[in-house]
Length: 363
Image (cartoon, rainbow, N blue to C red; front, side):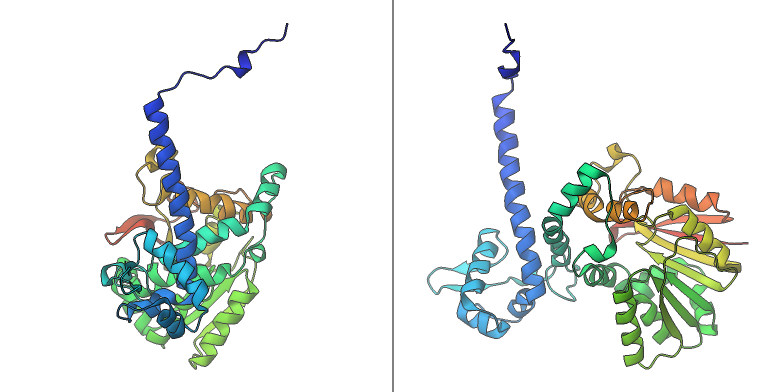
């Protein structure tokens, strides 16, 4: 006779199960809210509302030059998510200043709505990722809609906006050298905002930016031309096997190493590209290589999800290791020491708990 054991339900703690189910409903609600935050950011609705007194959906739609019916439904999401305040008597909506402080462009606490775009991107990529889950194949950067645009906004907050106050001061002596005039490379430069900012501030130095994405390089080049900069150049190139020798005095990578085909090969190549006395500044995600150490790391689940849907697949798509976003600061530090840097310093910025910075020097 066939056993019916498979139909039996394991005993469980009902109170615990109901508590977990409640948490899962909160997850679903928050996930939907995050996707709608992306809409609010990309449409400019948050920025419009920041400067408005309490207003009707029609007034907000008019100010944003958007359709009122869609705006009203988006506002309903924001109200029930406790992001936007609603006055039922006047049927007016308002974005409190304390909320705008982390949801608008140039916000003093950083714009968290930027990261809502990643949540929306996860859904867009679901069918492709399911196919990869079965096959083990990877994807290409070009498979991700407006990815460089999103990353440029992210980098604009974590790197470019902090470049002169926090980032470059971590590298002792580099500002004086940039003032005097040196050669600088940003590998995996994306749309080149940080490099352009340095090129404007340090006209005596010469800057080069390399990135695999032609669209990002075209954008960066156009921005440099528009600013009349003749001390910065951008080039679309695959950094696999990168092997320029002693061409630069200062090399940077901002959140660019872990999704390469051969991360260690790239770092070794960048070390070789430095002249004697050169410095390499690497920024990457500051999580640990050990999962158990990341239970309280900021946005850990979010970062693993981004890894699963982007950073890991694009590395695998190049035939790479697929280290992923949370490859770990321990992995990065060991890699820097293996390729021959004589000094490797790990640094953290108090206002930025998600990232780690390494200042590595060549003798």
